[in-house]
Length: 397
Ligand code: FEO
Image (cartoon, rainbow, N blue to C red; front, side, top):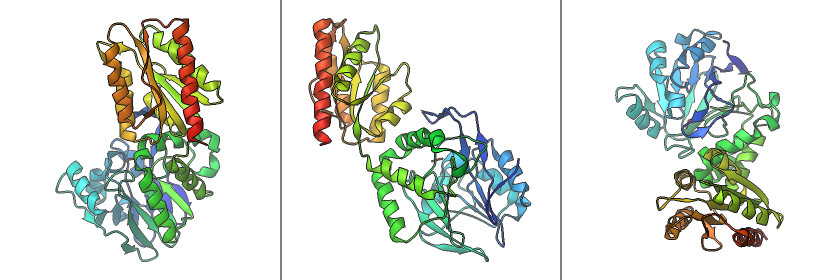
């Protein structure tokens, strides 16, 4: 396995994880890459490592360029285990002169890998002279962990930005100009929706700060997915667009069902919404993973949540979806809740409370069907969809 040259003295030495299908709770249909980078020259530097288990692959790629023991500096831009998992092994084998991280990075790395880990803090905006180029370290707190930082190789204007501008997308190809946008767009959106969304205000503030500092990298090297060497502006533009959360005339109808009563209601609500010109994604949780529902929600103005009542509770898959979405803090959604019940109508207050905990602006009380919806109830469902559509269209005026 060989390193891939990015520029003179700069190489990709990461690993490809074709088999990863779940990344802490979200489905990664296309696997992922753990991108690590090697800077050769007067002072060889390794930027980030890989997930534990992929160390040998990384080392082999490094060896295709230099003897790993020549590496003098190791930089950990982020303390999450998909990048720091092999750090102990790197230190033990390579014995670099210095291991550097942000102040929070030092704290978190020691908490994960042991208090004796020989890692030093670099100050925000400080530089490190490599002899033939310079590195600048910029903290990017909460993008997406408190320890996150980015590193700029000044002379070559290459930004190593860790998780920012990444996506989970395994490929034998490394660069943006080798992969058509249609191949990776969904994965970029999914990554943003499931990882970065809660920090959208911080994304916009960080991009503004970078712009003010006059930093416009020629190449952007994230720790997952494509390296942006031809059109780095495209991924910045997309992340900016995702962060502004500009919503389309689009509504997601997410639900689960026991005996298809809630399913029948969902179909009518979808019809009602669509009759008003709204794009609708009807996503039963038996068939759509929560991380795909959230991906569709990223540019949606509305959310309708349906649940049967089971033992006086919201159906478990729906409750799980609400918990997941609450953490992601999608803002400004209009919508409603609905579902069928047998003998516990009052339990719908729990579904309404769950929806409100998401900040969902409910246009009406819960729409309930006692057991199987009859023709009149189905008409009510259609009208419920129309009502939600009108509220969405009014908001987007
Ligand atoms: Fe790719 Fe936050 O780890």
